[in-house]
Length: 326
Image (cartoon, helix red, strand yellow):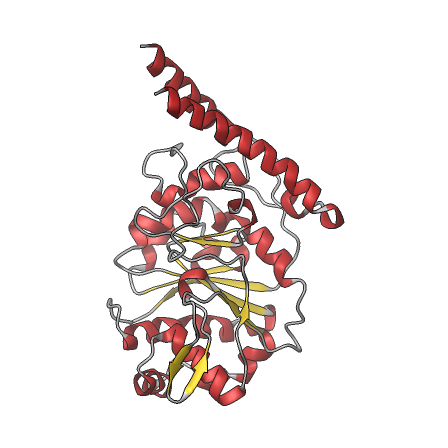
């Protein structure tokens, strides 16, 4: 029990040191970590003060996972930018009405994609994400899509994408899950795993418009290459347009099993733009709340603490203290 108390103490020290180090490392843009500001003590909805951005954020969920995974996302990183975040699912979209105000109901996109981890179903889901962008293309300069087992540090994503010119640069941004390029159909190419999140610039999306429409041609393309959606899109970009992957090292996927194993110095977490989770591959933090899927609420509290987070921390520390006394 004493070791657990020490762990909690080290966690608090780590968080304090990370905040201090972040300020030192970002003298040229010291407000990167202060995009997210608390205006009140209302703990039901997290207020945001993000800078204006033209990034369409799409979250892919499904009938199988939306009830278990989406509530915690809607409580955490969705709140950074609800006006620009859309959800696509093959489940009952009305399920989200209990979490979202009526103004966001048109951000829910229902598909008829099958519930299966096979090429046709995956490409069907992917096509729906592109469809959402093209229906709103006049408002956005980027499409960034994510799965429902990811945490997205939206302020850092905005800051990262500022270095590019999406209207003139055809950009395909993400992180590979393999150590070597994919080899197939007589060509080598890198693909970004969708498990780490992927961003497409406006100029690239206009270029590939006909290739990613939700029609039978797109499905036939996936079937003909025998590639799932993330691999198929990278293949099209390489073969047809000679566009290569731009690697974002701070995008992280669940395959990086060593990402959360360092208990004493998990300083990479506060620099991560995306984090992917699976099974026991989650942040090694004692959960602050019950049913904290992937420890995502706890992670969010530590990165962007508010009044409720500090209250939960006090309760947890006091509980460990009383348990140790007894």
